Length: 519
Ligand code: HEM
Image (cartoon, rainbow, N blue to C red):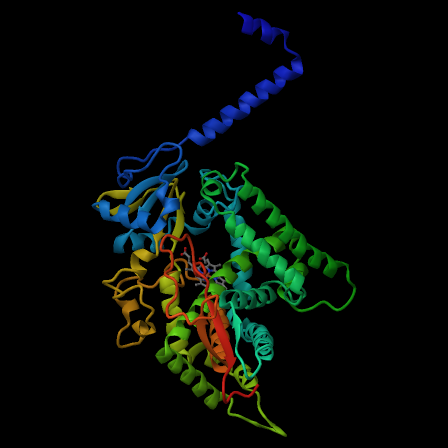
């Protein structure tokens, strides 16, 4: 009775505030607690699946969770939740085939929702076309930029950075004594620069402050992928606010260059930014495209190149083969020319190798990179089934409509029946006489497969081959720890990581000028 009296006597604005707070709280509670169930013909629910949170091990021990769930399930498939999102885990040959070949499974919605980086996407809306519209725009623009006839000019852009950055490394390395670098920072910065040049413009790529800002904002966005932002992307958390602010800073950076272009009456450079401006695209779309292209292009290329160099530093046999391959290509395509008064610089010869040779004549370097990708690109590939129909999995099981689907690449990449001694880096696996990557259907997923092969593969291969060829030809290099003591092996990678990462412990590289090379 007292409560009723107190409420009646309360000021109108306070009442309104209390009502709004109650409505907000109940909306939040409904949002958090709603967790769709699975139909009977979905794979069996994971034994650790809990109301509200779902299966925590998906976040805390990702590969262990996949391996254990697949082993416990009679069919290799299982159901679980991430927060309120219903997910089907797939494994084995049938699971892999459905995952990569089904027309009903949507890649862009899978990543937009399960990566938690797109809070504006309603995860469960069947008719939510916004993520696909934006991703269609990005895919179309990327496809146009990366088409075959543009490869010669793309190679020229790549070689501009290979020449400049490796010349700088040579200049800062005295001929008498080696210097120590962090290969992951050095190579990542190099790849970041040439990716920015390729998908945006020289103005951003050539300005060290802009480049540093791109790198730090990317790191902030990368770190913002926490379990909470993935499960509840619309709830503001420290991570999601930091991601939002990093996004704004990136937007401002790119937008400022675009605006300066529009305002200037001078000669317009011929680069992707200008071409998008000329086609009348809005600033929002252009910035969205540049940020997505940098995301798709930088992390995988930068880290795989750095890891490959580290493996080569520890493997004199494969290093010698790779060097021999580069020497052969130089002899065939750019024999040493007499420059009056001096010998031709080795880096100039490397940059003179033609496109066709870069694409076809470096199998050893390709096998090296391939095994790095197999070992290090561990993580869940993501899809969504919002096709309005079930997707059959065989043995009576289905992926229901309005459900997400995940497949862990380690399921095949670390399968010892396909890749014996799977944690060993061994480029010889891909030699024609062994061809372990042909030992099962879709056995190598490093470049995607079936319906979603990597759109940037040809470009990324050029970036990696040119960078590796130049580095191993110009420098002697070995791994050391922080005290400069030799490192005999790399720190073991964390199998439960969500995506490719740098080493867990400190790895440094002693780099010295190679004898016989003309600098
Ligand atoms: C070493 C470098 C790279 C690696 C290892 C790599 C790997 C992959 C993989 C595994 C997929 C398929 C993912 C899945 O099925 O869930 C993929 C797709 C894709 N990649 Fe790459 N990628 C690399 C570089 C690039 C670059 C430089 C670009 C362009 C900027 C790019 C653009 C794309 C796009 C747009 C897709 C989606 C294709 C689709 O929607 O069908 N990638 N990549």
